Length: 188
Image 1 (cartoon, rainbow, N blue to C red):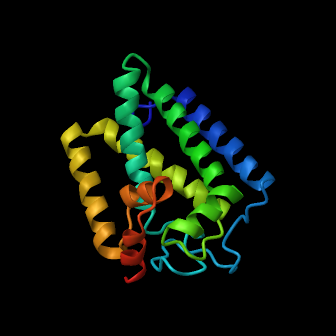
Image 2 (cartoon, rainbow, N blue to C red):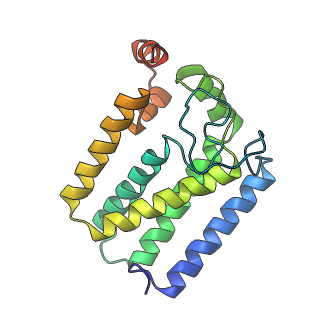
């Protein structure tokens, strides 16, 4: 057992990440930033390297995805082993990343969010997003629920203050855009 997940569970997780990566390649996503560099962190949201590097401001959102998936998994499927819940979480995260990199969502981001020049994620960034989700999932599995909620709120407020965006606003703007929020975000 490593971090509460069996060897079998880690093999399933690795297999799911491999399938996910293969699908992104088949979709024609660039393996790394088209700029040709690989960076551990890229902190400029309105740039051609956002969502292209290993981590960026949206990595905090993917950690929160892990918190949410762990909490929902334990609530809806309380008898399932941790590795099965992790596999389900990876599947959901991978499905979102694949959808997020489809033309319909890329165009939607450009139209209604602050991601004016968004062209989708590099494979490096998408896989890193899934790894951040896994880190959030595993962290939530070891913390008290109220600590997990407190950290999620801190992440949301920190990114809201820093870049005028966060998971909550991202979902809101994709589902039901608010022009006033878009204008406020553009003013930052």
